[in-house]
Length: 435
Image 1 (cartoon, one colour):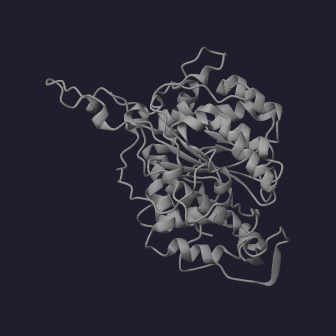
Image 2: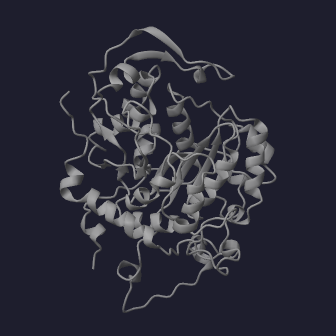
Image 3: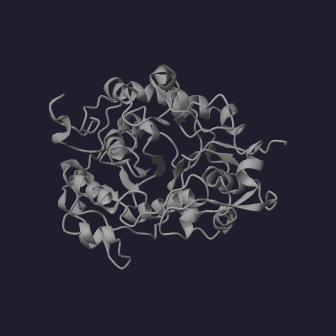
């Protein structure tokens, strides 16, 4: 019998092509070499073996005896749960965000996922080295071999095209790291999850893997004069040290070769769409990148515009990025910082993530304690953890495909059922509104 979520879905799943980009994963022997990010190196030679207890299904079939029940030659078709998906997370931060990135990684961690951590060039190289070394000190990160650090960092300016370049750089690296992930999620150090990864992966396992969760609207409004028509020069494209954004005196018209859409910086993107943006033969992703190079608001427009101008992907969009935020009373300002007064609204929203939190705010401790069940300095317990509760639960591990969803899965399911109902889903996809 199908769940309400399954009954809301009918989108087909397409097979993913292979990626063509790379990163050198962290290992103790290759750490310094990794931090130089040499483009001539091979990742496969430096990668440690994956723990067979975490991923027993990845063992060579020749090493595993197989037995077939003649009365049920295809046992997986009816009795087994869907395969848990894999999420590729890009977690970005700046100078002073080292501990925030650690905390977010622990709150998001699951052996089935991939994680790429990026400290921009405002942070010191010693911070990046410390980040890499600290990761090597966590046994589960070594065993799963799924946490990497960008050694050759980029600048990140909220204005200009450097946010797009950082995101595309990270996505390209993640394509090379693993052929197995299904969705790409970009987060910054000020974000935090509102569900466990067991909750998140459990619910996503019932969804078509070509869906893209992106806030989008064609209504530009006040952003036209402040964030789209002004011409700027992003110093992150050409300066070694951080500099000021340069504004030109002229302004330009909006494009008419394609329809602009705007949204939010964070998105949940299918692997197929990420490959389209980086490896595809359609030139729209590159054309739009060139247009947004000199625009004050880039990342919030990039993915929504590509999705909604592509006949291949515009029917795969869900108009919500599963991230809770609280807009300032003045709509022209950025969303305000979240605090303890937002806790109930956040949880009842059914969102998977929230943004943005002050560093080490008490509300994060409450989320850890009441929602994630996380102990400080440890990862969130999941079905793969076999240790005693409250006593290094995840120091002993088993099969990473075993999920134990909790109340967060129910909240997320209710939200997705509402989003994916026929009326809400189809009538909010890439609608061109009259200005």
